[in-house]
Amino acid sequence: MYFDRMADAAAASAVSGPPAARAVSYLHEISPEMRGCAIFGPSGQLLAATGDETASARWAEPGQDFLAAADAAGGEPVAHAHVATADGEAFCVRHAELAAVAVTERFVLASLMIFDLRTVLRDLADGKAPESERRAGPDGAPAEGGEEFRAT
Amino acid sequence: MTPKPHRTLFDRVSGYADEAAAYLRRRRAIRQPFARVYYPGGRSADCGADADAGRELYRAAAALIEVAGPLQRAPRSQRNRR
Image (cartoon, rainbow over all chains, first blue to last red; front, side, top):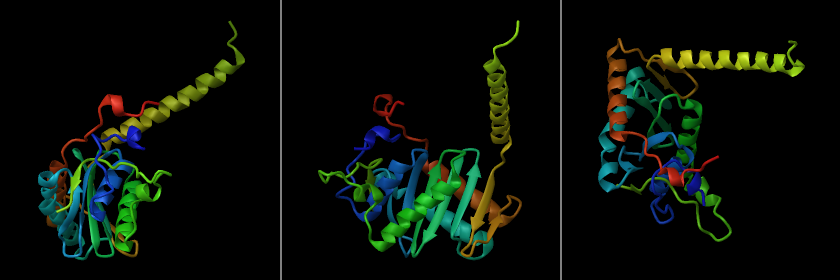
């Protein structure tokens, strides 16, 4: 339904995947300048990330390192962090016991990116479906998500 | 030859728009890398690259950006053209 507006590659259905994977797909749908993202659970385990099964597993260690480095910068757990470099921008957001990291193109609207990440984490923590599924059309078919994903 | 009345106004608005665009281009060109962390309660702090913690944060961000790779765009035929 919405894939003609997406900047991502071929979409995969987000209906049957686990909630975190559907959340990653939804983030790709609403953030065309996002290169990838990952969602971590309460113990720091990778729940879902951009890409197929092999690609998504590569997010685990760098994502955890980024979260740990953000926490170590001030000596306490951060609510969110934003790092802008010449090669792109990295974000991390925490909500409840979940955490998300995302990488975007340069000069994105940081407040919007952080808002989207926090909204997705809040929906996940509350057990709600992503917004695209809640806005499913009359035939019940949800909006297709972004890049192919696999939850680990 | 006397210019048309609307032309003066158009030229002035175009001039403002050109200056604004140039300002934004300069601002983007000179923007330096930065790292900022935010804590519950609203407090925030900048992390400079001169400290160990800041360097580690930049290094971790660079590793994450490398994992993400370049932006994947849909083929031109699938993009919404407006």
